[in-house]
Amino acid sequence: MGVEIKVDGLTKSFGRDLIWKDVSLTIPAGEICVMLGPSGTGKSVFLKTLIGLLKPDTGHVVIEGTDIANCSERDLYEIRKLFGVLFQDGAMFGSMTLYDNVAFPLREHTKKSESQIRDIVMEKMELVGLLGAETKLPGEISGGMRKRAGLARALVLDPEIVLFDEPDSGLDPVRTSFLNQLIVDLNAQIDATFLIVTHDINTARTVPDNIGLLYHKHLAMFGPREMLLSSEEPVVRQFLNAQRVGPIGMSEEKDADELAQEKDQELPPLPPIPLQLEPSNGVPRRGQREPGAWCREHGVTPPPGSFEDNMSMATGA
Ligand SMILES: Nc1ncnc2c1ncn2[C@@H]1O[C@H](COP(=O)(O)OP(=O)(O)OP(=O)(O)O)[C@@H](O)[C@H]1O
Ligand SMILES: [Mg+2]
Image (cartoon, rainbow, N blue to C red; front, side, top):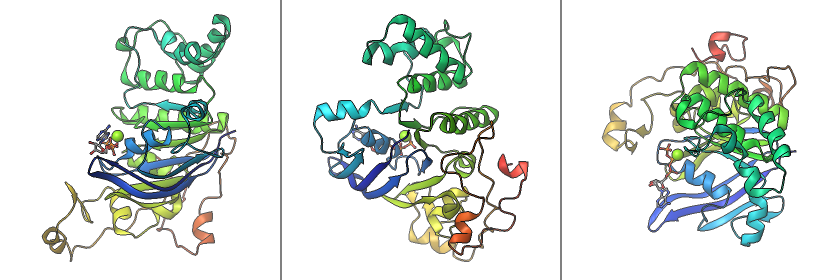
């Protein structure tokens, strides 16, 4: 289970506004990827292009042999069934109970009987820890519960690919930790391919197998977590360590004066690479590798203190 997504030479603009160009990457089957980037760099547009909700100007998105950037509506309809999407705000229907919200895709896209639907809905509600809340309306529950309900709904059609658009926005740090653990557990359990857009650096540092960074209308870097977390490339380093010093300014790029001013400022050392979050039931992840394996294979010395079993690092404190 879980399928690969191969993105090749993808370019997207709206009218004269170029959003990003020549984005190429392969999202490996069954692994977790995180996509980062300053606000407005087109992360949500990227997700929408992957499900064919937006058409790119040029390039290909190949899933199971079908190029969804250039296929018929009919093929697109079929391919979309592989996806589960968790929208930023949960995108719940406000007048429907959580039960009906989660049942919605099943009633819409399958011919299942109400009793079959009931089994699936209850299974997914249990998976995300919402049993007992079925009759609540979205307006009656907390933001964290709404996210989990959105996740249950994204899972009812047993997706091969799950896209998450800022699943952790608006959540407190403890709920974010629980949600991250839930994402890692789900990935191990359902074995689907996960792509998460987030602004949470701790999530980006501990949850994924691979990280991508969109910046300045292109994909600045994409690769294994350890590669980006040990990278000295200025944009990657600045973003992944949430620093002010670096090429990224308040309105995207710093100008020459701003950059000249910080020329002599010393960069703080790279922080240690934390251990990757593991599934709570002890089962390994599909893409699991020994801590430090990528660094060893590529002759990269990770920052001092990396991969030590230190809870304060794993939680980003
Ligand atoms: N349907 C659309 N028509 C025209 N422009 C659009 C459309 N959708 C998005 N854009 C533009 O594309 C750019 C990227 O938007 P997008 O929502 O993908 O950013 P983002 O990286 O997800 O930002 P954030 O981190 O704030 O969510 C923005 O300038 C936005 O105005
Ligand atoms: Mg967005």
